[in-house]
Image 1: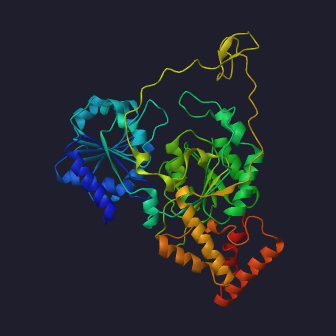
Image 2: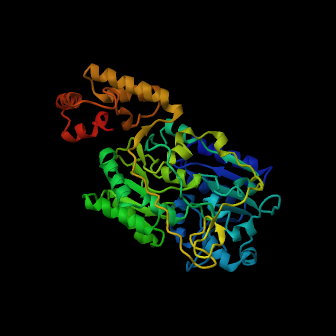
Image 3: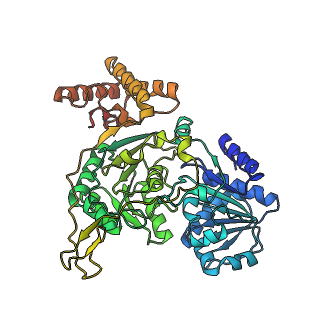
Length: 507
């Protein structure tokens, strides 16, 4: 198993911190090689004579976990569902689902582990069984606890990874991985700030599906998404994140209606069925895959170069997990230079850019105590005149159903958004494009100069408006197409090359 230099550093730092701390959270974003780091740690612990349990949160994830951990070259047992067990092995891959049914005492008796590694720890550490096994600080146990996550954030203010872990080890930031060539650069198309009036929060802290549907799952909004995709991302392997199965099916149907091969995938499907769809997306048999609570588990299709955020969420972790699905580079000879994020619901405004994350964003601290708030808003039921909480969709006394508020607003056009820490890079690239156009040189000349200076290729969407601004005239458009045709003729490029380089005219 060949480690990247920073992966070696993360592993060394983890072993160093283990001398002074029992609980260590490793934060490694998409593309940083979290699984590689975890696999090497397992090997290291085994060589030290430790018994290691590697925990995932669902039985259905065991198959993918085994694929991820193939590089450890160590015998292991499995504690999950109907898998045959071999508890004599020093390493056990275990599902919290199965362990929850058997209980903490069973595990302690049958496999008295000395090291527990929680995969996707922002999820796995918060199951009831996990909190029994690894209770919140200051309570401690005698085992070493390692967490692996790309997004160490919790939606509820009463929960924090700092409640579980004493210290953390941080892999390079996303911006560093982009500049080192381990992630592709991003470009964001968004509507800016969205009006959230009328959205209802569930007790979990997430928006209710009913209120999300009224805002996001309308024919007008879905048609808008399809047309924006055709204008800006046609030809790119794409994943779309939706509210529920109905939304995923409807959006896939709208793509199919205009001749774009699309399908839905959801969390109720078996792993084999999901993997067939992932393979079809990878090969191009599918162009768009619309997901409902599925792609956070076992999805690894690096060729994906467009992410559609078709639903709102209050979860920072979910937002960055979704974007991260398009971050991977390809290493099989295919070309992938960047990833587009299409945000018709306004999440970029609320959560920001992957490239703008800093070390401060990954600090883990114990959750703050809940502050005493004001009184919850109420409303009067017209059926029985009783005052009830404003969030209630029906009256608990007389069962009066309040008509849902119509939340849908006319879809807004998407515009290019540049991260603040990339403004200088963006302006430099646009100046290079203007120079290339004036000299009748290929835009790839500008690409080369940019990469030479900054270390990564500029997103193609940054070409938009570089020469003629945001409102090119018909004469401008003809001139630019003529410019591309001259370059194509000179270099024996085909018509596809011309179509792929028309970003100047995409608005």
